[in-house]
Length: 461
Picture 1 (spheres, one colour):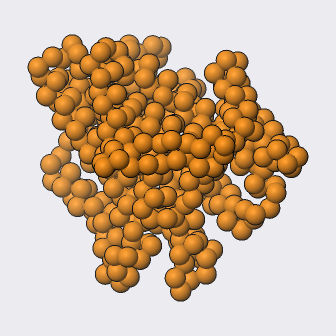
Picture 2: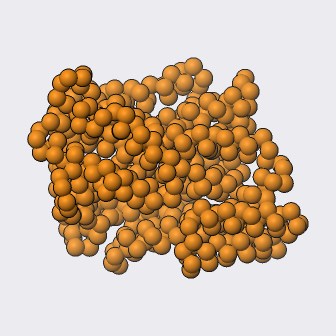
Picture 3: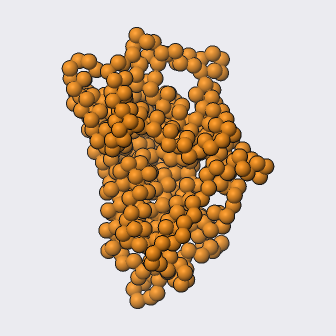
């Protein structure tokens, strides 16, 4: 950031206005990526006129190529564009902070009062509604990605690999990306199905576009030495705390396990948070024992009904895991530290991708091979999210989902006698509200939560 009195990005958009704007976006970031990006577009393009339509889409296309929450990365990019690294940090932090505080408060309530009928009834209604949100995500991503038989085949292959053979999610992402890179060269018409949007600038010149055209934003120009310094700094900020914890506490400590696990998750979160939730849920439940099966849906319901990125559900997972394995700390003290830790390792990589890569986005946009890789990864994500929906449904609608293993093949044969008919009824109500009548997400969740409490208190749940 330049000092007062000099020509630079700090004078283009005054800091007080920038702070108010990014705080407003953060507090209104409901509705998942689509809703969050819509809020940003309205504020930054239509109202403030900081960015033109084409510049906004240009930045969004780059963020879509990255692992992590694209909405958070987009607002970080805009902050960086106007006020350098400090601007990006402030914009990204203000986007995450409301959700962090909300999830922390709800996690404390959940952990301390989970046995009360109020909390149990609340989440009894939210869980089935979240199932429908996952189904909606399958339909939404599928409509964008499954444009031909090749993409459908990739989605089915990803589903079979993760659902029946328990293939690791990172491996599926890497394999899909590799297939996309190769397919984009051999048959681009089959593999490049997600293309960057183009739009002309409408109306007067936007503030930051004008500054870019006049050459006033020097920090946006690629610089090899600066890139190396930035990369080294953010790698230290990301990996350093993990290495320190490992040296002090050992690899089996819950904080070390969470730091390493959620760092891996941050690197493979392509296609939005739903794409990695299955990976997180199954590992957190089946490998580490941080959660019980139904609790992941509770955390997802929290994040669906609070501002901020949906991937903030990792905070809930980390909170409960440390609350149950606090070591020498108090349960709440350990859980609070875990919330900070998993949030840190989830979002530091996002800042790294933006601060290192943003100056090169013009070059990246012109590479059709990257569009092919993104298209193929997104198709694979459809299969992964479908797996997530079925896995959640089995664990929500049946007390005994009937998991069986036949060699390397995993199958589910649920015990119909353990069916949760009240939960199924709430899921059908949620499907009607969200898919048929297109009622807003928060209103639908509220209706289902109230219905869940009524059924639970009446003894039907």
